[in-house]
Length: 475
Image (cartoon, rainbow, N blue to C red; front, side, top):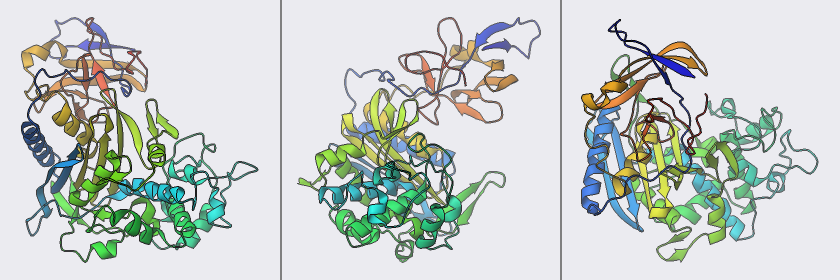
C-alpha cells in the first residue's frame, strides 16, 4: 500500500515512500475544537449565508432556499438566486420545490401514526393490508412486513423500470413486482427501492380506509401548518411560486430547463412539493420527537423507532424508517436527501444540539446537497474559524506533488496533491480533484464534498485514511 512520491518537475529529487488509503471515516469522529467564547448566533448565521451563496455560485445552482431550526425556533429562512432563470425571479422562503425522497420520512411517520391508532403495525405482513400481494422472498414464516418495505431490506434493488415511464398503473406494478427475482437475501442487504415505499403507502391507505394522499394532508400537512405543500405535481404546478427545475450542462456551460416528472405513481416515495417555510415545521416536529407546538402528534416510542437503525448501509451508516443514520463529528445525524429531475433536497437533524435544517435547490444532483450537512453544522455549532482562511502554500508545500499508487484498485496510477480554490486537494485518478477541508483535531483532512471520506498525514508523513479507530483500510 505504498505510493512513491515523485518530484516530476525535477529529476534531482529522490523518491520518498509514502502510503495512502482512501476509506470511510464515519464513526466516532472527534468533535471540532471547542470555542472558549461562543460566537453570537447572528454572526454564525451570517457566515452560513455567505458560504451557501459561495457554494451556490460555485456549483452553478440557479436557486437555493434554506431554513434552519434551533431549539424549536426557525432561526434562518431565506432564498438565494433564482427560481426562474428566464424571468430572473428570486427564490424566497415560500418558493416551492420538489423534495423527492425526503418524502419517505413523512410516509414512515404516517404509518407510525396509524400504528399508534392500532390500525396497523410496523411488523404487519404486507399481505394483511394488500391481499394477494406477495414477493418471491415471501416463503414459509418469513413474510415481508411494512418495516421491511420502509427500510429497504426486501432483497430487491430500485425497480425504476416499473415506474419511471409513468405508463403503468399501481395494480400493474404490484403484479410485476411479485414476479421479480430478488437480487440479495431477504433482510440481508440494504437496497434502495422506491416501489416498496409505494406499496407501504398503499397499505397505509387501505388500513385507514382512505388513501396515502388524503392521510398525509389530514394527519401531517394540516396539523403542522404546511399549507403550501402538496402531494401532487399537478396541484403544485398551479402555484406560481413553483420553481423551474434545471440541469447544468458542464460541457456547454449553460443550464437546461427540465420538465417536472410526474411521481403520482410512487407518491409515498417522493411526490411531495414544499417550501423551506413549510418544511421548517416538519423539522420542528422531528426535533420535538413527535411533538409540535406543545401537542403530541406521534407517540414517543413510535418516533424513536423511525430513528433506530433497521439495517446497515455501510460501516457506521444505517437506515431507519425513512431516514439515513450516521454521525457528524461523533454525534448522531438523522438525514435524508431527495433527487428528481431538476431538483435536489436535503433534510438533516443534529439531535444532540436540537438543531436541524432543510435545503432545497432547483438543480439536479448538486454536490451542495451532501455538502450542506457539514456546512450548516460547522457554521452553527462547530469551529467557524477552521476553514475561514485559504491554506498557505508554504505550509502545505511538503505535501504537494505527484504520487504513484499501487494498492486497492489502483496500479501505477498517479494521484496529484495540489491547491485548488485556495484549498489543499487530491486528484483521484479517473474521478476528479477533491478539495479538502482544513484538518480537524485528529489531523484528518475531510473531503469538502462529504464528511464521510478523509485523508490523514501522520507525523511520519504516511498518508492514510481510515475508520475513526485509526485502523487503516484498503479499498
